[in-house]
Length: 163
Image (cartoon, rainbow, N blue to C red; front, side, top):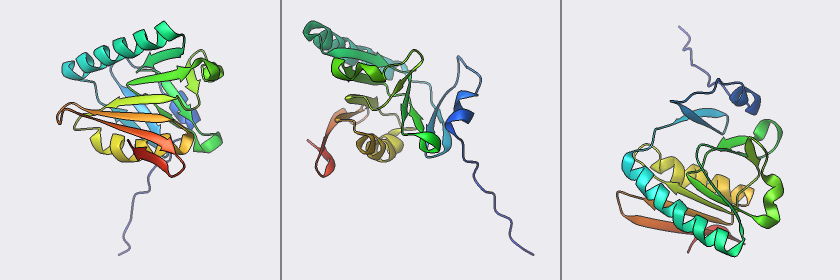
């Protein structure tokens, strides 16, 4: 008897955009896979709020650009290869404000901050780190509340390197 294998459904950007809006579920489109993003914990929200507050004050005081937070789609890539992420916190410099559209950001932010959870740590450290570097995110910070660490990666000639 022949073995039957299930083939993964590959989602497109158009599929993603056609999903009904939900107040309880968030998704990202990574490598053609629709990934549900877990609801953040209260601890995650406290960290996010404090980091965003400090970053927003710094950026605003100096007129550097804009700070955003999830849930807001960031579309990376073109055509069928587009991927959609919703970073916890991100910054776009005023020199690159043309990537900010009404309902989404179309291009790589200058800075992305992801706050990991047990459900997202692997994806944040590997897939997203590579994705962000490939699309030109200049600085990527991974905040790990459990380990109480912050990893800072800067984009350079050899890709994204730990600073």
